[in-house]
Length: 492
Image (tube, rainbow, N blue to C red; front, side, top):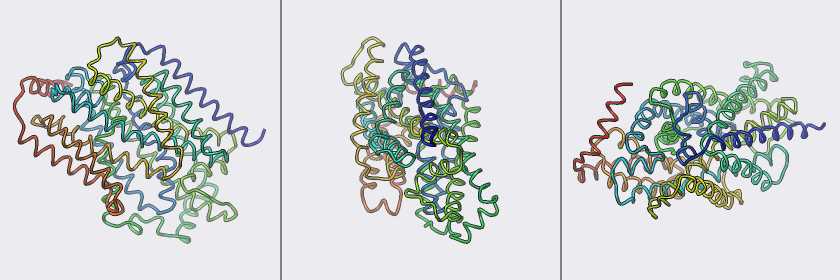
């Protein structure tokens, strides 16, 4: 068999495994709570790996290695910011959000939690939250589909659109059929694949170059700035990169994993597992870029057309074709784990937070599950349209969507959980300001100097605090839920 045949067989086996998990999960899904939140039944391992796989996405195996390959470890500040933000998210947000969402009318989405938390009978906050999710997840899902097209183009020379449609089709099938449980179980498989791949690829590249010392020597002799955290970084650049960590507090597809934990007590074990996975994976991504840079310097007859494909190309050069195929499947795992999570959250926003709120619907659970599946298809088609013309880098698309969610939801989530005087009108205007500032800043020349999440997050926080101080009035139901959340957390 040819090398390509071996690789395609490995990828087909991976695709089949994902679809089988989707069919298994279908049998476990009977109502909207199951479809959107897995019945709040996730243990620490599943929740940690699911959050990690949903979080890191194609950025981990393609975007970050490509950025470090081009600009050096100056891009590593982003990884430091992300690791710090993820740790804080698990430490302070996870247990409190898990508890508060259950206390506050068993909320199953972030918009429904905010609506219930502030007792906002007008549903405006819930609807606006759902619209923000729809807008920014369109960019996010598109980035995953772009990555799928680039993957098949780089790995097999297949037409970009063929790769785009292949990845979209398989991801849609298991998300459509199995819902949250399918997404979470596949995330565990995908997270494990990503983790092992990011250890094996740089390790074998370094061995092929004669060891760690020889690898570093090649890099230093060619371009020592690659190994510097400061050579290609400005002060605002470092601030912008570290600011990625702020985004964690507002990512709906990540923090929904906190809501799905069996209990708040599980957050501690999940944090250790998740952050351990994340730190090793980030180091592996950086090592892939640096060893890949040295590999191509040592083998000048070889060419790399796209720096974001460094992981893919190294895997094909260094491993047996079938193993290379499994490593390629790990890239697909990174892409699909995130796209599936985002599709599900967007689906929940359409059904739970927009459709129910606007039409005051009160149908059977089965009807809502069917509507959720239809929403998955609709969002997928819109994202495909956006992704059809590859007009931005993967990192660029992810960066914009990450900033949008971080700046729109991050301050709202933090203040709603920890400051009892936060008001619904303050949260609403803060969210709008954060989302609009990111959009305006991201499409202006200012984005070249400072990452848009910084002004968006800061202004959102200020608006919420100022308006809440002006509009706060004691509400016995809100006070009771806040106190009950604190009580339950102290008992655990």
